[in-house]
Image (cartoon, rainbow, N blue to C red; front, side):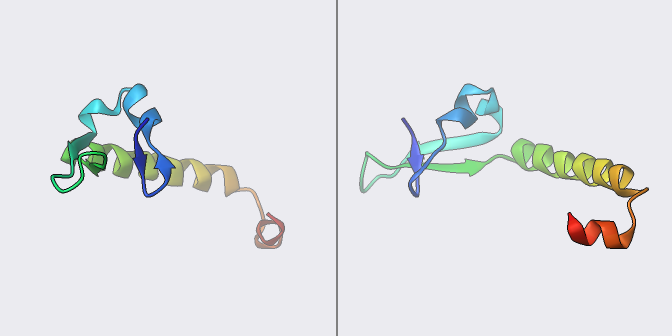
Length: 71
């Protein structure tokens, strides 16, 4: 089980993110695994955020400002 700052990140590896993250063991303490995003991973996240933003604009297009406050 991989933990990063107390957060389990094993799901990242299991769900095909092996091209999106780099993992390496910390030289001072072999029990610690350092994880960072690859450029491909960053691009995937940016793309996902753009799709999410576009989707939310479409969903909220017919919702008034008053109704948005309730949400």
